[in-house]
Length: 143
Image (cartoon, rainbow, N blue to C red):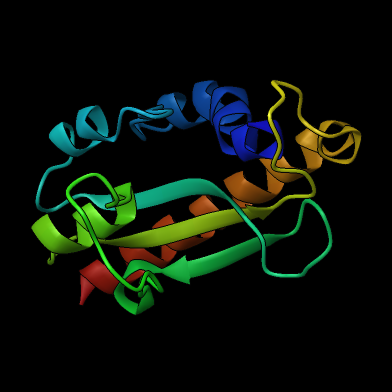
């Protein structure tokens, strides 16, 4: 797993803060069916994931669910990702994918030293993004 597990670690790190602010946290790891079963049609999602966009390790890329497209060439019953299924079954659901730039995707349970050293910084940045987006939603729902 290597750095692929960074989103889980960050979610665990910020879970207390989010719950105090009435934001439900679902840590699905590899059980995306569990995650899907907890989504409601009017939910606004923040999906934390590992990503590789050629940026600095630990940087966060924010992608709108509306603009997300899968680049897979073909699908089988078992090749769908969580995000693919959200787009398929919850077309009205809005949200963002917050992709944390990784260094090492490998067969190890350890997260890279670079990411470990920046866990608090990444956690705080994720919280800031979520708060900013929620405030933006609150303002737009007034009109």
